[in-house]
Image 1 (tube, rainbow, N blue to C red):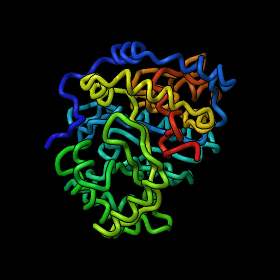
Image 2: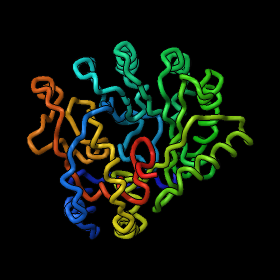
Image 3: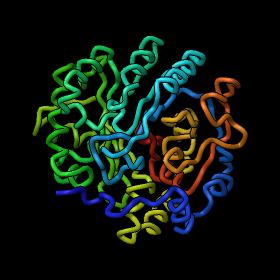
Length: 344
């Protein structure tokens, strides 16, 4: 069974996506912030350097805001990776190196970045799709990650096979369970230094449920059915970008979903949005306020350095944040970030 959300037509350009979102009837995000005396958004000190090493992936997930897949060729070079390492070296306040993709483990620079981050004493996070751990060519990957105590944040949309396979493709749930068992056997998810987090995305055009309740359900079901343990669950809102935006368009739900996000705007969630403490680096060294802006080609603006080269010249990390209609996804309900809810 193919993913129920998988795109059936060529993906729209970033310009077409921007026009689609603008036409969905959402108000200006900056205007909403101003009405609540919360804007303009600006950084409060960069703690997380999130690096997207490329779009190559062994899966093609229906909710993917990156439009990653096996046919993508965008990939970070060693030259760009060295600049990432230099930026980390200069700024002790960047305590976390968060590596994403695609399947970041498939990029030739992944293990280099992990080793350099560990040498610099940073918390290193691998955003893993789980099934990459089952590939024959990655047979030593779990051992590599465990030896360095890399924190794993892994996507598992549902603790049921039907929900996960609907979003990620036929057979993905079974492979994910196999990968989770390998991680548990290596000491992950047991409350020690080898941290295993799971990520839940709704399978459809609605907001995630209570993160606390979902975590309780995941713990019970994964333990009873599969003997699997983990540390934390993150509930993340599906962003109206790329494949999920195509799903909304195809099902006639774009305007309804955007209005859902706008109506659920939570002023208290604004203080926790990840763009205030994150800097996102693209595979080619371009800088973004977040990974979502990156996939809409919205590079940093308002006079801030736009590339690793220019940032290494200026060393100026403070910036005003660039926003758009998709930002309502991060402030709806309990809020949403790469670390789950941001308000409660």
